[in-house]
Length: 459
Image (cartoon, rainbow, N blue to C red):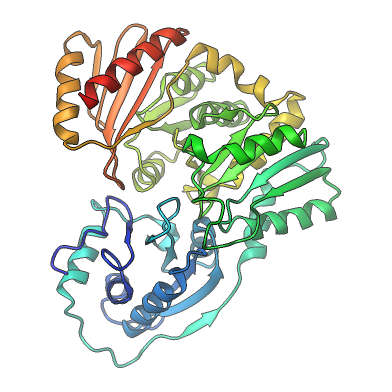
């Protein structure tokens, strides 16, 4: 335990049994309680929720035990997605929150996402390294007054907030395929469906892999991977739906499919939402990540907004949004952040906004993004598992940097030319190198350069 490998750049995750277990989870609870309340102040309260992975309940119990042994009180929220913990921490004015989840990682993984008051995130640059040191040292003083545990569902108030993002009177009749991937999005969809019915909002939900099942009989929910999109796409076509929506396991990311069953890259959804916000709230700041950004920058500037680049990753985006008081932030990996949601990411708010746009503009989803896709064709994120990632990245940089018009090292490195650009970065959470390429209205150039860089990486 002198060098725990489950602590990543902005959360904790690892293989259960080898990198993360109940003892480590208990220590994390103790350390987080001490970090928030060194004097063992029993007025401190932390929310804890968890996804439906088979190992979540065991780890959750250990975390809660560690928290109460540190002298803080716990509100157990039950089965939750990550953003439900974010919302409860903000709405209940708590001192922190923890979600037990491994999101889209393999079935034998689990992890923890931690926030402080007002759902401010922890990262290695902002508290997580201190927490890691406390866990590794395991030198906790005994606490006389242990904390208590109470049980509370905050689902109703959370859905109350979600409903503020749509105007029920403008929603036209829509059929939506919703694929929870056997993760924990289903209970929120069910609650939203009830609200829609009460308000006579004419939306029909076609539910795919809806029940929470930690065995993940239909595969780990990660629609960022092409092989995880087929069921949603087929359902959209079969049911003649207006749109498809799929989530990862803890539903902090949502992925959209148009009425043809075609997957919409998250990059273009960022531009779509940025435009929608800026048309209503002029001159605001929009945060984007460096991987794919030409389309976002173009749209934000055309709407008289201010585009601001941030390192990818939820803790970095949130920190920058707070600093800039940005209205909206988006990553091409399908994380979307909202000022009115405490600068946190949500996998529910984006699709609610999109059905409002479809209804208001009386256009299909494919029509809303087709101009963006033609103007800035992109590769999407391509992952490569390499023996020596640094050597391979250095080789690519050495070949391409000399003729670049702009070089950025905000996250990995980005090289820009007159009519194409690319970003290459090492993953913060997995042993992968991630490539993104885009061009200006030249799909064949984008595809050719993508192939060329991948071949060099793997050579």
